[in-house]
Image (cartoon, rainbow over all chains, first blue to last red; front, top):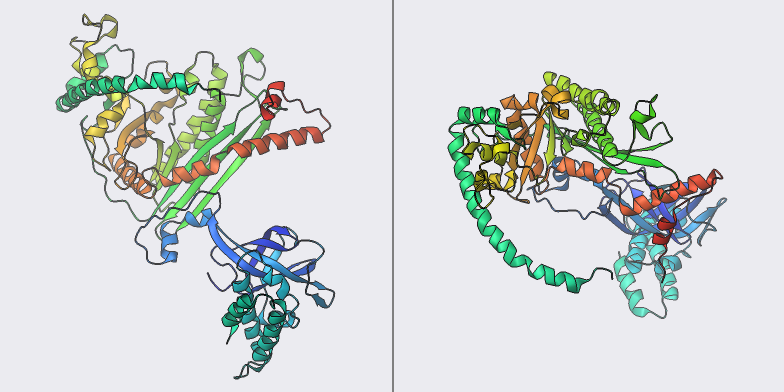
Length: 204
Length: 410
């Protein structure tokens, strides 16, 4: 799975209030924990909690074992395969833009079908994660909630480091993680094992 | 449950011994047929003469130039080539539907191998309704019109597949060999029925299939375009028929005066293998092809009247190792069959296609996947049709039988 750059555009193919599925160019799904932005009229923010590449029509892919050692040469040797696969990612909605204000709770309507989806830049990620109210929505994700929460916080911490001038000590990054850790401790007070597991995955 | 399996099981019990006894007999027939094939392969002129003189009720096929029992290896396939295939499916005119109409769906695959690999898999649906489009034939004479459904719709679809194949071949890279596949045959067998009128035949053949084959031939004169009809697990017996003629004790074969034996069997039943497929399963090793065979068309038949140089010739192919092992029939127009180099080229490309897909040409399978209309899609189509009819303010009239099938009750 490649790290999707912010100029790759996906498209919403299924949506409800709390999340959506987006189609992406083949084999280029956005990373686990990546912050996505659906901008079509309003703006909806969401975090990737799953991604998959699968057959487009339900036929199970068959291993043809023709001797290639990398995916690109395999696809070159079987050029029709690209046309039979699709890559999608699933994201939980974590907020929306309300005028100039980012709101860290669910919007009033699902992401519009077929709306374009982009991966947020480091700057956008840092700005959105100034407030940590969205962590509650991450922890309630239907799959991979803890792994996704940790991945999201790692990416946000890196974004804060970049946005804060990228000092060697990672000042902004560390401050961000401390704040996030405290918020997690508050949210997961009754689930200490879960809390520890996430914190271990976030530790620099 | 409506099928009574208890009664059925008793009938199935009798099947085993019957199959065993048939198997033993078939083994003896096959051995004699193989013996005849080898013997007559050495006497091609005698065989040709006997076939030319024979009066038979079925049509034998004779080898075009290679020995009758030939088993021929393919040259190696080029790395750079294009595989094209078209296939179709349809929803027939259905009297239970709210509106008389048919739906044709043509699917295609265009796959380019080697340098600059590329592919296109797609389909094109066509909905036909209204009095004009639901009949073929003389527009001025209703007695010479025929409704488009059943065999006629299948023929219309076959014409569409070959036209599309010619379009795709024309648009493909002229530098590369092009294997152009359809599922089945170029011959519109279904039109042989007596009740099909001349205007209908003209429309489907003179204005449909034959010009499409002409275009493929014109392309093939400039470059390596290789049109092929591929029949998986064919049921033909034309080579076996030739063996029957060969071994008949009559100096000039005439089935009307068959010298039957006392038990009612015919002398030629000694080599009467059920199908050519069984014969070639013993003659061919995996990947090999047989000689190219042609049938002498019956005078007045569709084949004789319309096809000319496009008359089908065919070889049998045993699929290459590594996939399903079967004997397929590979049909091509006569003008292609007469070019030994091209026959070798298409043999090689077909093997490559089969190797890529466990024994069945890959492009053809993908074209089929594009064309196929699944059960749920048929149901969606019916609902869309109903919605459209209802939206126009017309009463949706569905037959009582169709309604009762949708909602079963006790």
